[in-house]
Length: 166
Image (tube, rainbow, N blue to C red; front, side, top):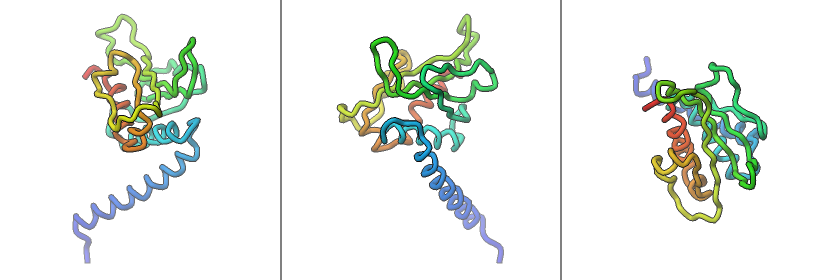
């Protein structure tokens, strides 16, 4: 008996879901995060990239104080810099996305979003996209990351995708 399309789609979804579950466990163990909240958002960023729902196809991690590469082949990759200190400011991580709007910029290049995972903030939602596009920084409640890491990662991808000129 031949399987129906519905059965075939269900089998595909089950296999994809199982594969992603195993990948998430592996990604969490290998994550460079300092604490469990950072590790969780790093894994969520990688899972969203693997799902292929955004223009950016990959998430790569930088060493502290390392800049993203100059190679244009890397401009659809989001780069994440681990916890760091710039001047007197300490932040949990920074996300770099290449600005693909050369018609609007004299010199296109990498832009940075500084992200602070705040354990003192009780909000259970990610700040609206418009609030952090111009500020170039985002404070996310740790509770928000714990509540829905996928949505939080998508908000970061939304910021990164704005560099494509949409």
